[in-house]
Length: 330
Image (cartoon, rainbow, N blue to C red):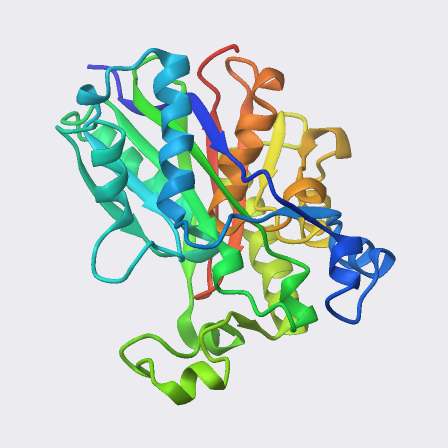
């Protein structure tokens, strides 16, 4: 019996219409376009309207797949949403998304691994597919980062944007799909990138709200250092384990956190710039959505059999790399 691999067979996305560019941020905080572009590579980011949750974007990203693939949503077995900005606590955003897209025979759950959420979700979905019991899984990376960003903090407000990307995973016995993964986490530095209040350790109070403890905080320099070392190491390891050279890799699809981090990772891998896919200048860091948004934007470039390396790093800390053989021509 041939080995079953989980292959990506369709992609979808949703981005809010509202754009927040660097010139807009100059009016809000002490910053400028040159400073932001030089340090991050970001020119603009998308912002979802207030009063609308992450599920709004996730539903529309999934519906893109359903429409383009002419997929019967009742055939979907599982919906996974990778997010750190769920609609609400206690109830999974994925369960609501599944109901809203008509996936009435599916179950759904969320994964919270910040910027590595999509890769952790891809690993999880792959295991379900490889078990042989599940045939169609919708995996969505979606975050409304504007809901947890303090727009008076220039260290964070310049980085993040809102968006959602989705993929359909199906079994493949021809060798295409997910080949290998190298995923890691280390919680000893969790205070370097966090939201302090709102959890069980520091529940919400009037004081935590007034002290702005519900916004994302990061120690930029230390996070950058860990991101560069861990993301590049994971990418290097996945190549070594699979006997891949820079010539064998068709594309590096890395989490879009900072152009300098992506450049450092590609340099470690020996990958030329034309093989490094980027859209950070258009969307900023959309957390769990960055990798599937790249897949959607560059779907036409990807060819059946292409060797692709995914890489990410996020709060937790969480990080990793995955090796995938692309399964179709667009």
